[in-house]
Length: 272
Image 1 (cartoon, rainbow, N blue to C red):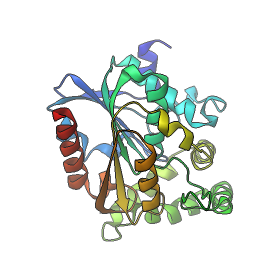
Image 2: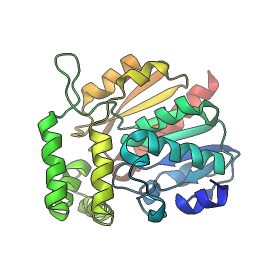
Image 3: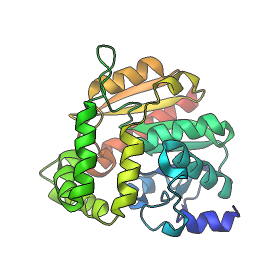
Image 4: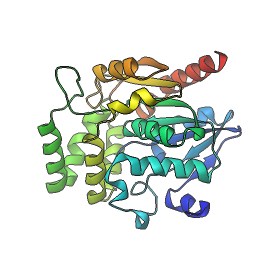
Protein backbone atom coordinates (compact mmCIF):
# COMPACT_ATOMS: atom_id res chain seq x y z
CA UNK A 1 0.00 0.00 0.00
CA UNK A 2 1.45 3.43 -0.96
CA UNK A 3 2.52 5.59 1.98
CA UNK A 4 -0.05 8.30 1.24
CA UNK A 5 -2.82 5.72 1.47
CA UNK A 6 -1.55 4.57 4.88
CA UNK A 7 -1.58 8.19 6.08
CA UNK A 8 -5.24 8.45 5.14
CA UNK A 9 -6.18 4.94 6.20
CA UNK A 10 -4.74 5.28 9.70
CA UNK A 11 -5.18 9.05 10.11
CA UNK A 12 -1.47 9.49 10.80
CA UNK A 13 -0.35 12.71 12.50
CA UNK A 14 3.31 13.72 12.92
CA UNK A 15 4.47 16.28 15.48
CA UNK A 16 7.57 17.03 17.50
CA UNK A 17 11.04 18.45 17.02
CA UNK A 18 13.22 15.38 17.62
CA UNK A 19 14.64 12.79 15.25
CA UNK A 20 13.98 9.59 17.22
CA UNK A 21 10.43 8.42 16.46
CA UNK A 22 7.99 7.85 19.32
CA UNK A 23 4.89 5.95 18.22
CA UNK A 24 1.77 6.13 20.40
CA UNK A 25 -0.80 3.34 19.92
CA UNK A 26 -4.26 3.57 21.48
CA UNK A 27 -6.25 0.78 23.14
CA UNK A 28 -9.54 -0.91 22.33
CA UNK A 29 -12.47 1.45 21.76
CA UNK A 30 -10.19 4.50 21.80
CA UNK A 31 -8.31 6.68 19.34
CA UNK A 32 -5.14 8.78 19.18
CA UNK A 33 -6.80 11.69 20.98
CA UNK A 34 -6.51 9.74 24.25
CA UNK A 35 -2.76 10.52 24.24
CA UNK A 36 -3.21 14.31 24.17
CA UNK A 37 -2.18 14.74 27.83
CA UNK A 38 1.07 12.79 27.36
CA UNK A 39 2.67 13.20 23.96
CA UNK A 40 3.38 16.98 24.22
CA UNK A 41 5.82 16.26 27.06
CA UNK A 42 8.01 14.33 24.59
CA UNK A 43 7.59 16.57 21.54
CA UNK A 44 10.82 18.50 22.06
CA UNK A 45 13.01 15.39 22.05
CA UNK A 46 11.14 13.00 19.74
CA UNK A 47 9.32 12.78 16.44
CA UNK A 48 5.78 12.04 17.62
CA UNK A 49 3.69 9.61 15.57
CA UNK A 50 -0.03 9.32 16.30
CA UNK A 51 -2.48 7.12 14.39
CA UNK A 52 -5.83 5.34 14.57
CA UNK A 53 -6.28 1.63 13.92
CA UNK A 54 -8.58 0.89 11.00
CA UNK A 55 -12.11 0.99 12.39
CA UNK A 56 -11.20 3.46 15.15
CA UNK A 57 -11.21 7.24 15.44
CA UNK A 58 -10.88 9.04 12.12
CA UNK A 59 -9.38 6.12 10.23
CA UNK A 60 -10.74 5.18 6.81
CA UNK A 61 -13.45 2.71 7.74
CA UNK A 62 -13.73 1.68 4.09
CA UNK A 63 -10.32 0.01 4.53
CA UNK A 64 -11.67 -2.32 7.22
CA UNK A 65 -11.29 -6.01 6.39
CA UNK A 66 -12.94 -8.48 8.74
CA UNK A 67 -10.52 -11.28 7.89
CA UNK A 68 -7.39 -9.15 8.41
CA UNK A 69 -8.61 -7.84 11.76
CA UNK A 70 -9.95 -11.14 13.06
CA UNK A 71 -6.90 -11.40 15.33
CA UNK A 72 -4.26 -9.07 16.72
CA UNK A 73 -1.79 -9.74 13.91
CA UNK A 74 -3.89 -7.55 11.60
CA UNK A 75 -3.54 -4.65 14.01
CA UNK A 76 0.18 -5.37 14.34
CA UNK A 77 0.43 -4.97 10.57
CA UNK A 78 -1.21 -1.54 10.94
CA UNK A 79 1.62 -0.57 13.33
CA UNK A 80 4.26 -1.83 10.89
CA UNK A 81 2.59 -0.01 7.99
CA UNK A 82 2.51 3.23 10.02
CA UNK A 83 6.19 2.89 10.96
CA UNK A 84 7.13 2.20 7.34
CA UNK A 85 5.05 5.10 5.98
CA UNK A 86 6.61 7.55 8.46
CA UNK A 87 10.15 6.14 8.10
CA UNK A 88 10.18 5.40 11.82
CA UNK A 89 12.97 2.91 12.33
CA UNK A 90 14.31 2.44 15.86
CA UNK A 91 11.21 3.95 17.42
CA UNK A 92 10.11 4.08 21.02
CA UNK A 93 6.74 2.34 20.92
CA UNK A 94 4.16 3.33 23.55
CA UNK A 95 1.14 1.03 23.56
CA UNK A 96 -1.90 1.14 25.84
CA UNK A 97 -3.78 -2.01 26.87
CA UNK A 98 -4.16 -4.41 23.92
CA UNK A 99 -1.77 -2.22 21.93
CA UNK A 100 1.01 -3.33 24.25
CA UNK A 101 0.68 -6.86 22.88
CA UNK A 102 0.03 -5.58 19.37
CA UNK A 103 3.34 -3.69 19.65
CA UNK A 104 5.11 -6.83 20.83
CA UNK A 105 3.77 -8.75 17.81
CA UNK A 106 4.84 -5.94 15.48
CA UNK A 107 8.32 -5.89 17.03
CA UNK A 108 8.69 -9.62 16.37
CA UNK A 109 7.60 -9.25 12.74
CA UNK A 110 9.64 -6.11 11.94
CA UNK A 111 12.22 -5.55 14.72
CA UNK A 112 14.05 -2.81 12.81
CA UNK A 113 11.23 -0.35 13.48
CA UNK A 114 11.60 -0.58 17.27
CA UNK A 115 14.19 0.20 19.93
CA UNK A 116 12.14 0.17 23.17
CA UNK A 117 8.64 -0.89 24.15
CA UNK A 118 6.59 1.05 26.71
CA UNK A 119 3.64 -1.14 27.70
CA UNK A 120 0.83 0.65 29.56
CA UNK A 121 -1.60 -1.74 31.26
CA UNK A 122 -0.56 -4.76 29.17
CA UNK A 123 -2.00 -8.28 29.32
CA UNK A 124 -0.88 -11.30 27.28
CA UNK A 125 -3.99 -13.28 28.25
CA UNK A 126 -7.22 -11.92 29.76
CA UNK A 127 -8.75 -15.30 30.65
CA UNK A 128 -7.64 -17.22 33.74
CA UNK A 129 -5.65 -20.42 33.14
CA UNK A 130 -5.55 -21.74 36.68
CA UNK A 131 -3.64 -22.72 38.69
CA UNK A 132 -0.64 -21.17 36.94
CA UNK A 133 -2.05 -18.01 35.38
CA UNK A 134 -4.44 -15.31 36.59
CA UNK A 135 -5.73 -13.12 33.77
CA UNK A 136 -8.64 -11.59 35.62
CA UNK A 137 -11.61 -13.11 33.77
CA UNK A 138 -13.30 -16.46 33.34
CA UNK A 139 -14.19 -17.45 29.79
CA UNK A 140 -17.90 -17.15 30.61
CA UNK A 141 -17.29 -13.53 31.70
CA UNK A 142 -15.91 -12.71 28.26
CA UNK A 143 -18.70 -14.56 26.48
CA UNK A 144 -21.28 -12.59 28.50
CA UNK A 145 -19.49 -9.33 27.72
CA UNK A 146 -19.55 -10.08 23.99
CA UNK A 147 -23.21 -11.08 24.16
CA UNK A 148 -24.06 -7.78 25.87
CA UNK A 149 -22.12 -5.86 23.21
CA UNK A 150 -24.25 -7.55 20.58
CA UNK A 151 -27.61 -7.13 22.28
CA UNK A 152 -27.23 -3.72 23.99
CA UNK A 153 -24.12 -1.94 22.80
CA UNK A 154 -24.96 1.47 24.27
CA UNK A 155 -25.82 -0.07 27.64
CA UNK A 156 -22.57 -2.07 27.55
CA UNK A 157 -20.55 1.09 26.87
CA UNK A 158 -22.25 3.05 29.64
CA UNK A 159 -21.60 0.26 32.14
CA UNK A 160 -18.06 -0.74 31.20
CA UNK A 161 -16.37 2.61 30.54
CA UNK A 162 -16.67 3.93 34.13
CA UNK A 163 -15.44 0.58 35.50
CA UNK A 164 -12.41 0.65 33.20
CA UNK A 165 -11.59 4.29 33.87
CA UNK A 166 -12.28 4.12 37.62
CA UNK A 167 -11.43 7.57 39.13
CA UNK A 168 -15.08 8.49 39.89
CA UNK A 169 -13.94 11.95 41.03
CA UNK A 170 -13.24 12.65 37.32
CA UNK A 171 -16.53 11.63 35.69
CA UNK A 172 -15.66 13.53 32.53
CA UNK A 173 -13.01 10.90 31.73
CA UNK A 174 -15.49 8.03 31.98
CA UNK A 175 -17.84 10.12 29.86
CA UNK A 176 -15.18 10.56 27.21
CA UNK A 177 -14.41 6.84 27.13
CA UNK A 178 -18.13 6.02 26.90
CA UNK A 179 -18.49 8.45 24.00
CA UNK A 180 -15.46 6.90 22.29
CA UNK A 181 -16.96 3.43 22.64
CA UNK A 182 -20.30 4.65 21.31
CA UNK A 183 -18.74 6.36 18.29
CA UNK A 184 -17.19 3.08 17.12
CA UNK A 185 -19.11 0.84 14.73
CA UNK A 186 -20.65 -1.82 17.03
CA UNK A 187 -19.85 -4.70 14.67
CA UNK A 188 -16.21 -3.66 14.32
CA UNK A 189 -15.96 -3.03 18.08
CA UNK A 190 -17.28 -6.50 18.86
CA UNK A 191 -14.81 -8.13 16.48
CA UNK A 192 -11.94 -6.14 18.01
CA UNK A 193 -13.14 -7.15 21.49
CA UNK A 194 -13.24 -10.80 20.46
CA UNK A 195 -9.74 -10.59 18.98
CA UNK A 196 -8.54 -8.88 22.15
CA UNK A 197 -10.15 -10.88 24.94
CA UNK A 198 -9.74 -14.34 23.39
CA UNK A 199 -6.08 -13.75 22.51
CA UNK A 200 -3.29 -15.69 24.22
CA UNK A 201 0.16 -14.28 23.52
CA UNK A 202 2.02 -15.71 26.50
CA UNK A 203 4.25 -17.80 24.23
CA UNK A 204 5.38 -14.67 22.34
CA UNK A 205 6.90 -12.97 25.38
CA UNK A 206 10.13 -14.99 25.46
CA UNK A 207 10.87 -14.04 21.82
CA UNK A 208 11.02 -10.28 22.50
CA UNK A 209 14.48 -8.77 21.95
CA UNK A 210 13.81 -5.12 22.76
CA UNK A 211 13.98 -3.69 26.29
CA UNK A 212 10.54 -2.95 27.69
CA UNK A 213 8.81 -1.01 30.45
CA UNK A 214 5.69 -2.56 32.00
CA UNK A 215 3.47 0.10 33.56
CA UNK A 216 1.14 -1.74 35.93
CA UNK A 217 -1.81 0.30 37.21
CA UNK A 218 -3.26 -0.15 40.68
CA UNK A 219 -6.77 -1.58 41.06
CA UNK A 220 -7.06 -2.37 37.37
CA UNK A 221 -9.98 -4.68 36.55
CA UNK A 222 -8.68 -5.30 33.01
CA UNK A 223 -5.07 -6.17 33.90
CA UNK A 224 -4.70 -7.06 37.60
CA UNK A 225 -1.38 -7.00 39.46
CA UNK A 226 -0.76 -10.70 38.84
CA UNK A 227 -0.64 -9.98 35.11
CA UNK A 228 2.06 -7.34 35.45
CA UNK A 229 4.12 -9.67 37.62
CA UNK A 230 3.70 -12.51 35.11
CA UNK A 231 4.84 -10.26 32.27
CA UNK A 232 7.90 -9.14 34.22
CA UNK A 233 8.90 -12.75 34.91
CA UNK A 234 8.45 -13.84 31.32
CA UNK A 235 9.44 -10.81 29.26
CA UNK A 236 13.25 -10.66 28.82
CA UNK A 237 14.82 -7.28 29.52
CA UNK A 238 11.68 -5.89 31.11
CA UNK A 239 11.30 -3.31 33.88
CA UNK A 240 8.14 -3.36 36.02
CA UNK A 241 6.78 -0.09 37.42
CA UNK A 242 3.69 -0.31 39.62
CA UNK A 243 1.82 2.97 39.40
CA UNK A 244 -0.10 4.92 42.02
CA UNK A 245 -2.71 5.54 39.33
CA UNK A 246 -5.87 3.46 39.60
CA UNK A 247 -7.96 2.13 36.75
CA UNK A 248 -6.83 1.12 33.27
CA UNK A 249 -6.16 4.46 31.57
CA UNK A 250 -3.39 6.29 33.47
CA UNK A 251 -2.47 8.36 30.41
CA UNK A 252 -5.84 10.06 30.89
CA UNK A 253 -6.43 9.88 34.64
CA UNK A 254 -2.81 10.39 35.79
CA UNK A 255 -0.84 11.90 32.90
CA UNK A 256 1.79 13.51 35.13
CA UNK A 257 2.75 10.18 36.70
CA UNK A 258 2.63 8.49 33.30
CA UNK A 259 4.97 11.09 31.81
CA UNK A 260 7.39 10.93 34.73
CA UNK A 261 7.67 7.15 34.62
CA UNK A 262 8.27 7.07 30.87
CA UNK A 263 10.78 9.95 31.07
CA UNK A 264 12.72 8.25 33.86
CA UNK A 265 12.75 4.90 32.09
CA UNK A 266 14.00 6.33 28.79
CA UNK A 267 16.67 8.33 30.62
CA UNK A 268 17.88 5.32 32.58
CA UNK A 269 17.80 2.84 29.69
CA UNK A 270 19.69 5.28 27.46
CA UNK A 271 22.38 5.71 30.12
CA UNK A 272 22.96 1.97 30.44
